[in-house]
Image (cartoon, rainbow, N blue to C red; front, side, top):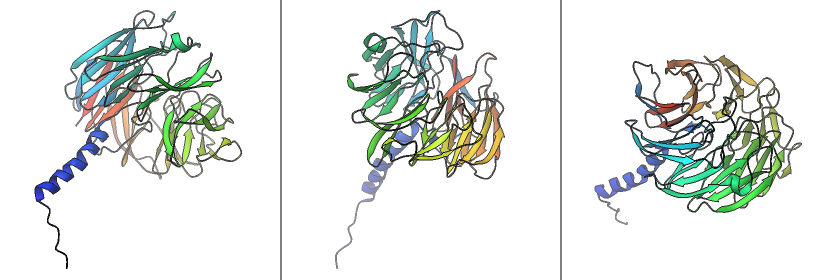
Length: 416
């Protein structure tokens, strides 16, 4: 009989710590648009109730005005904005997550200026990407830049100088997408459009895929299916999949209209696309090749529309928010409606799934927390953050015990 192997207790503890710490570090980051692209978090201890009197940890002003979401890496928050009469100044602010104090900020001279700034033109709308090497930012001026976590500039490109100016009346809103060792960016506008993949370390182009002119403000989705890394695009009149390896198109679906703002979501088997037109929000089954109009359409939702917020897939339910601020819960199996609930206001920010809860951050500063239920809408709490009357909540980031909300001109930390 073999002797049992005795391992020192301190060695076991070391192994446990070594295996757990990377997971904790990874889960506490919120590296890009909608986190990892699907508006989900594994963090369990998130705030349930807050008011102006209790639960607001700190507030701080942002250098300019912007509509992007904040991102978190470690103990640092990054947020972008623009300034000047013609958006000639671009800002990147870095704040301490725990205190809200400014650590550093950078001002970049915009490669392109606009003739006028209005509420109908994007203002610092693209969300950056954070990673272990630093922070990557993109602005609607065409400026694409990388900084390390100390604020030192690593590289920069002016895409409008390289590939032509962006043409359109509302600016560019698509956010950077973080993928392993690379960044992906969709530029769809009235001029020559493209999907671009660049190296994180050098900023150099891996590939650039030309696209037909097609105006939208959606952000692509990165996923892996059948061992293939793919980039999914839902953009005005088409849904497509591209190989991350070389930018070649895998499949497309073009029987859809007005999918111009909401970004796609997935449960690993289906791609969910939201549209502002009735009977256009739908599900496409992954695994197709070429034109999948007749082969991979899983369902169309009869009464659903999707405004600014992107659809959320969680526990066999797809959540859509329409322009009027109604939350609509649809079955993932056939798109049929399970229930709907009128929110206090519309939402620019996409709903968030956190285990048993669904969070909605409305434009007017009110937030609803619902139980993640397929049967009915069960409200767990209704909360408020006071914001300026002319402003709105544009986005959020998630960390341990905290939310960082972003309005046009400030960031607000809500925590336990």
